[in-house]
Amino acid sequence: MLDLAGTELSQQESVLLQNPQVGGVILFARNIESPEQVADLLAQVRAANPDLLLAVDQEGGRVQRLQQGFTRLPAMQLLGDQLLRDPVAGLALAEDVGWLLASEVLACGFDISFAPVLDVDRETSSIIGDRAFSDQPELVVDLARAFIAGMHEAGMAVTGKHFPGHGGVVADSHLEAPVDNRSWQELQEHDLKPFAALAAELDGVMPAHITFPCVDPDSVGFSAFWLQQVLRQQLGFGGVIFSDDLSMKGADIAGGYCEKAELALAAGCDMILVCNCPEGAVEVVDFMQSNNISGSDRLAAMRARKSVSWEILAVDNRRLETIAKLQLLMGTGQGNGKI
Image 1 (cartoon, rainbow, N blue to C red):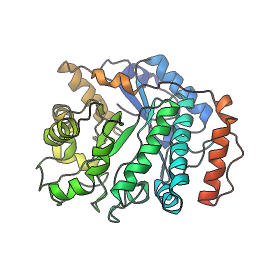
Image 2 (image 1 turned 60 degrees about the horizontal axis):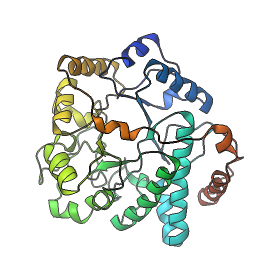
Image 3 (image 1 turned 120 degrees about the vertical axis):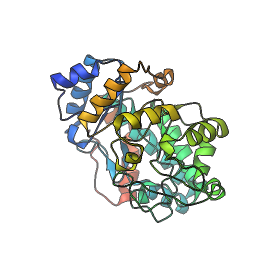
Image 4 (image 1 turned 45 degrees about the vertical axis):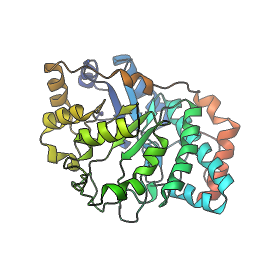
């Protein structure tokens, strides 16, 4: 999976997307101006290769690539706060927000948003923080389960991240290689709980670029122990494993782009992401082609299962009611029902 340079598909990108080793495209804020423009860009991508998986990071709070013309979504921590005030209403709202997020993303023509975040906030990680539902694993499970149900109802496959938990490190894996010195028992009793409890409900999982030296010497995304023995065998996860972006500094401990790609695939990743480095993406595509590396059959399950048009979604009562609830939750005056 790779990214694009701008708001329109270039001829060079169109040719690259037709390479059989390219399995997906992810859009970032630089690619997005409005719902109409995004839909047109994704249509261009589909025309170049109709089999690509189209993705975006749309979580809520700080991580919302889709903004202008889309519903402003809360940080997941606010849903956790609501759960503590009113458990019944909190779970209902989490399900509605999952449905709303997925519905708006699907209406553009995407297949998936990489969500939800299953990290447990330990008040140490600046990169996670309020992206997490809660600092209590059990509450993360309850809220994420409701959120996942909403996303599934909208027709979107879900991806839990960042396995086995990014909440316990200060370092940002976008900028450096984090190390978490907790023991296996500590992880089992805390960060791993959401992934273990929800393994059967997740369609995809994205591992963290973190090393847990007391458990395994390899960074999780390059570790057969974590991806095969723990995630696949112990937790029984049978869905898609996406690498986190191989251009992140946290992945550089594995070497150059070809080395990182080879290690991630050998460890058990079904799809690798190379973003914000066109030269690296081309290098990985050429490497995969020269080594006859074929795509994973699991990826087909991540395609959109259904969607509705913008026109229908704009006047959908559930959407309008959820927006009204979010206005109260976030204390905003946002929302006129338009997309």
